[in-house]
Length: 262
Image (cartoon, one colour):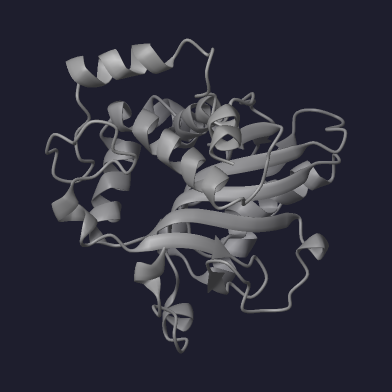
């Protein structure tokens, strides 16, 4: 199975990448995403042992009831009834992730997208979450992308796709400039993004698409994007760096139970 995972990640024998990546790791050692300490060689998780102690690992989220789980879903929801088949995150959103993602969005910290994409891809494969044919980012509106100078979701999607060994394509356009989702209520978020995405291709021919964003909160944006792709024949799975659950989810009995058992 390990060989299958390496092949799927584009890291198997004969790719010509192993020796080059080893050399680059020696010449330019990785640094912890949070404290910038130099990392040990070949460490998959891009943070140091000290920061690792504060890491709250992610998992899968049911797009219906927002149940959070590792191996077995705590619910009987039917994902086939949803445009979004599931959601996978590598961490729970906390203060460290808030600072990091703020840097990704507003401070042009592009060097971290490669290790983040590789980490996200490896976790997706190791958890057997899905096997996509395509990776696509949730798009920004052109006005917002022009203000920032880049789309952090597109950069993350590109490096995740490269690690998975599948194409990354822009499959959606964001046609309306909406308010930021961070400062409005759950119901307002749903209305804010309703109908804002347009699929750029007429038919996806049953392709399995991995839709990438940085943070998953209520899921309004990703679900709306998934619906536009599903209408063109795609089967859509979502993935994000971090999950920012609301108070209602955090108050569920046992939500944090077994987080150390990743």
